[in-house]
Length: 337
Image 1: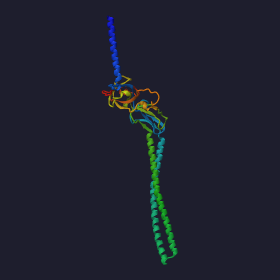
Image 2: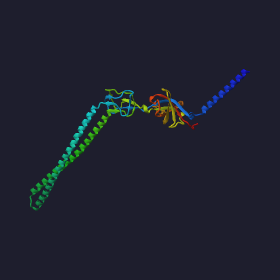
Image 3: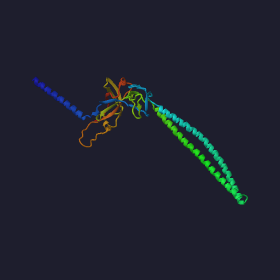
Image 4: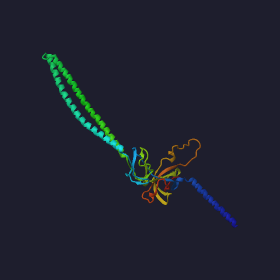
């Protein structure tokens, strides 16, 4: 009898366990993942917006003021490129500007001289015109000779040509001013361009951060567009967490996030959801998958969520880019079924 009772109890317990398991399976089957009040993922990493230091002028690297993994503040000197050729170019541009400025002043004297010549020729032309009219009238009434009339007309023609020549000289002198002013403007533009390039030889930190990937070496050649070093702003790190699409129905910007870092056991950091990506990571791949033809296997996609770490917490100064973390979003309330 005791054995029969034990068998009966065992069967009842087994039946009860099976019923519970079936109930849990049924609940899981009909319960959407996104309805959970906590959404977690360990596909998450510390990130930062790197700043690559790229020269805007080419030249020999003369000085490197920082070392690997050194902290620098915004405005600190990083690298100096040899600027001797640019300084020579600036001196040449300055000499050109001074020369053209002097020519412009000289040209004003030339214009004044040409204007005086025009005024003199104008007076002589008026006198020649008066004589031409007078001798023409004398020849008509017989008081003067035809020869005198012809000489007066010839003199008028000469004076008119001289006046026109003087006027043309004045016009050319004024046009020369425009040419010199254009040349001067070009020289000033060249000087400004060289001065701008000269400023590029002194490279300073645009942000505060840690120096990394330093490729610059004293005596090496800096080329435009090639990175010399990278600044990593560890005071502005964030977390990029890749959640499954089935977890995101109730995730919203501003929700509280609990963060644990693999490298810092026992440490729990606080954060919040800053933004949700508009597309999955695979959507930006060079060859995104297209499932329009052939066999199809459904794969749950992951979408990046940017999580901002709340400031003024202990241990945040130990965070490094690339560290693995686990992020748990406190959804609190979700109406998804």
